[in-house]
Length: 464
Image (cartoon, rainbow, N blue to C red; front, side, top):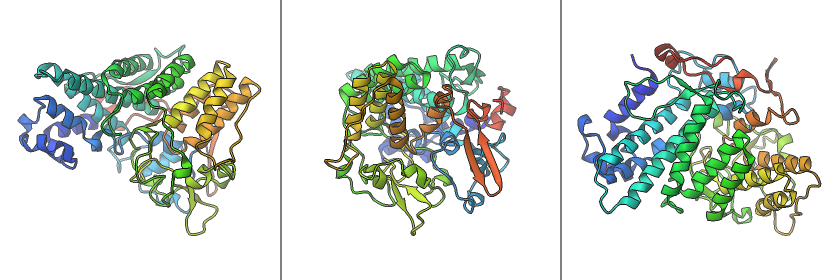
């Protein structure tokens, strides 16, 4: 019996029509490939159509176990027993064992590896097909496949590997690296250093191949790839490199949405259209715990927003006068799923933090204020200032916390900031008479590898 990721990938290859038919952009290709033996890309149009499958690459594609484990939200005692899956309850309370027999498919693991499988198929097919007169398009296809593969491996190591430690990354287990579509090859876990080397190589190679402006926001671009590199280098603590990539992104796309122009739909997210600052659109796996009727943001957190800060009203609402249970409605996704893509607001915050960490306080505060003025009511914003490096970093991290709520980023921030005693925190959940805690740098900051991968492939499990 094959492990789940390989079973899923086999199904992907043999049933393109089932998996991709829901997306009209692929229908022409798929209608000509009804037979499993013919379901292999044979021209550049086939590859483009495969990349256009938003169901695979974008919608509910990004791991969400870290978001469930973070302190972005709470679940009321009365709701907790009603969560759909034991996996959600176990993850929310940081149990050592997350999975059980009732939930054998782990989308946080399966979805990224399915994307990696597609990407490898595309990268293998490109040298074998005729691209006469279409080199520019072929480059974009290659760039997109490399972007998706690097993005997926980054999401995997943020979820299933311990935080990066430069002094020991060669000894920390990462995830299995698959660089081809041969399902018979069963790689073991590479080191975290090897994983990041592959991630960075993929994305760096993708950048010059991608367009500056994509046709749709669900496709990668040069600004998106630079934003992703800035995110990665920040997670690694490489502030100078993160700043370089943030600047490269903003040099090509610096758009910010003025929240004064938004009319907040109370139940469908921040906007009914894609925001200007959204440069690569994807969403988290849609677990039931993310339902607005299941989770809430503590009123004490909302009190961090000034009364003139538009995020206070644009991000949150109250259902049925339940003032003790404010709900988050600030997603950038038009379907009200939890947005986890790449947007310029995150890049401005990365740039500001990196400037502060290199003690360029003037430009750090200027960068932060460029973002914040778009979030406040007209004629009410007073520019933020800082006299010391610590004060600047504190203010930037606070704004990062307030701006990037429910974006799938808090888990990585906890992992990286826990290394600094000043910012390390112990997470706590209280459910009835039971109290659960997650101390800084705990082994549970890496999710367990799905059980079937351990039992069938013999790869090592994360300590919990």
